[in-house]
Length: 142
Image 1: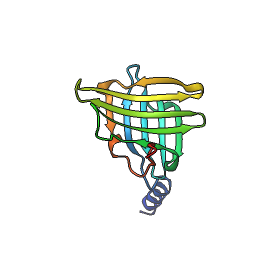
Image 2 (image 1 turned 90 degrees about the vertical axis):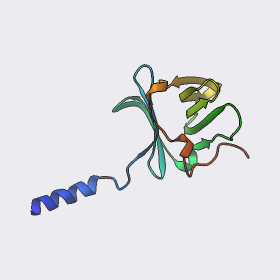
Image 3 (image 1 turned 135 degrees about the horizontal axis):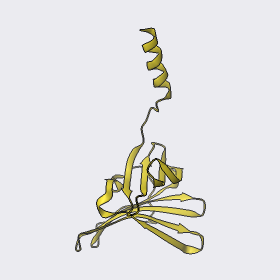
Image 4 (image 1 turned 60 degrees about the vertical axis):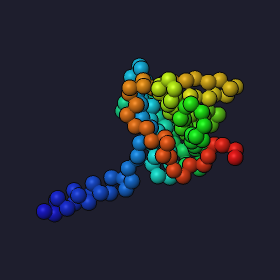
């Protein structure tokens, strides 16, 4: 009995009190995962093979920027910018209401205004809560 209590207490000490909530998660056509997690006070962006990401960036919520759909236009679009020094990762999702197509992925803006786009496979979007992100500063100037 004492052993079971000690094991339970030990597990409780090492288990985080909050669990990361997925905001966005998808797989690219070549099998890599794009993921944005809400860790409470921070957001975490990762890219790479499942379980072995090549890139992991954690930022305080106050450093991220959120862009929500303003109710105008044919595409319903949401995105979150995650800065990492001179590089910004824009995790985005858009649905074209006329063509009924999904565009999602990450756009990476590098110094010198260079961009790289990595798209999700439209049928491999497992989590999309970008339309319901809370407590992140707006990226709009107004």
